[in-house]
Image (tube, rainbow, N blue to C red; front, side, top):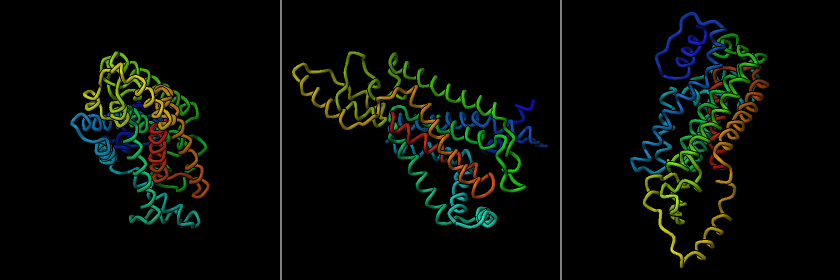
Length: 327
């Protein structure tokens, strides 16, 4: 029963869904933070569906990215983005903890908040647009990992910065064992999702599940031209279908030269399998959030609702950037 109440509290707190839980105690709050990754999974699936639908309708990856990130902002009421801006203003003020917390309470946004929002959103958009065929998977992983940071931020031993508010309600409510279990499930789910979709790309040519090397979406015996490779790298699954060309035996040497030149320019992109890249990106997101939480606790004396929101956005941005590099 506590788990259902916790899930309802997580949905009502982290999304626009009208889920209401009366008489919330710390046990219910702990369940909500433990189950927060499930809310991230729901948000990730919806935003990934928006991205995929936009691409299949013929939009460019950048526009699809904006629509997907915009849907997340709507679904979460911009709660985490607001927390990111407030924390940036508080930490950037250079004031003592009490004064910094007062800065974070204000309804306006300062220069540090503007810069944090701009850099974070630009990083998320650019990275997602560069993630190629694996962009939906990267987006789902980012959403789930972002909410997993809430589980770790609310574990036992992490204090609240204020005696009231969301931070006070959830701080220290999650056991270490529960946090480790949630992390194992998230990392295992990311690896399984990568394996499943990579297998789907090999068997059925599904365009949004694999690196460009196996995402040519045509017959297995019809190698892609350089145009098809570029289309696959940019995530244009529909266009990639029509750019697969048969190999001209007379041009084999030329194609080998082009492939060698391409290999010199792509760095490590495509060399890491999806099943390994997604968990690696999730771990990177958790580390980035841990560093930010450590800084916030030292400066403010604990966590607040704004700190939690900033952790979500920081982890999500890190996951997307790492996915763009590896995939």
